[in-house]
Image (cartoon, rainbow, N blue to C red; front, top):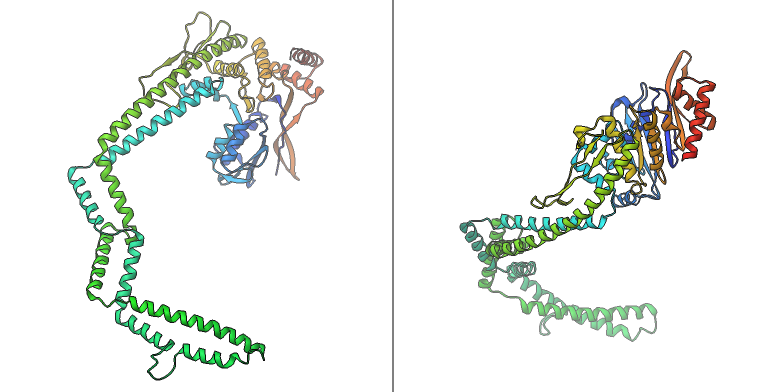
Length: 554
């Protein structure tokens, strides 16, 4: 089975190759490992399955490490993702060797990699993503947590109010019926101990004459009436012990027997005393027995009525009492909860206002930085705005009371408008890159992957894209699929992708995707090909010039 192994280094890696060579396949494969949708088309014709594996270092990624620990999937400072897709389309996912759901793989994947494909930047057009983008670029985590905690506390009180309304929404007839049931149950001893004692008393009284006869017969066998015929067990043991004791010193077995007989005598005396005590407690009282039977019948009837066992009646009684109390005191409890809810709402809005101030300050800084980067990316004179509005009349949200709408003007003299209406696909892609660079330093632990972010640009704009990708990779990892030499020369390393025909059988060949990490000479040839489509002394010289210029600038 054909295999492909890659080892990506820190810094900026450019992935290049002819059109159709399979460059984007690498990005798509990684997308599958991050929980993307699988398909039978991923399985090579004639193969039974496709298998994908990626290993990530977690040394500088505490968020991913914590996720793995909470999911009981942690192993060490690295994480191994694996996915298999068979020819029938069935897919299986694994994290550190443990089978997981695709949803779990997606949850972890968001903490490991950000893929900025040809359509991924469209997420920026969603308002929820825009606010998330602003917060990711910030350093006001304490304020975000404060809003989240205040919101959760407010929501908890609100839920208590809803439960109270549900429990207390009963008619007077229902309340009267429940009160009747409670009074009926309170006439009985319902504890498990009381029920057990009552059943034991019933069994003892039910035994009656039979029990008395058995105890009397036992006592007589142990120690019969002295005036009657025969001897009991106790007197026989004492006689035997007295007869043998004078010979105990003559034989060790006789001595052992005497010791055992002595113990038997003591035990039999105690057993006889216990039988007498039990006989004295025997009651032959039909009236009392009838009372015990009646009490047990009442308990059985209550148990059938409430469809529980007798031992569970106490719990049913307590639940009834709680419902009645809740209904009876609901007005007072509701007033208390409403006061708490009002106070918690005030605390939430206070935290939301504090967060709004932090967000507004960060929004101004980020907007200014992105506007400057837009100029470098071929949108000179363009404007990037992050207008933030505070709406404290709306229902609380875990993200606060702020609403954000990115406005841009990609051309001078054009009034800024909503991002999704003003920017073209290429502009959105470059704006996304500008935002990433402006917010750099907060997410260096996540690998950034750009698939043809440079589509539709050239010249100085292409140079700027390359330099910004290089800047973004400082201290982290950036991969970019590119067709532009100006972008590729800025990379720390360059990976060439090409299709290769291999011999399968005597008269059969197959095409596979192969990669090569280029050395210095290889990079010169690949850059030369990207510049002119063919290799020549002139194109190589131009490639050397570009690589040298990028190195000196970097």
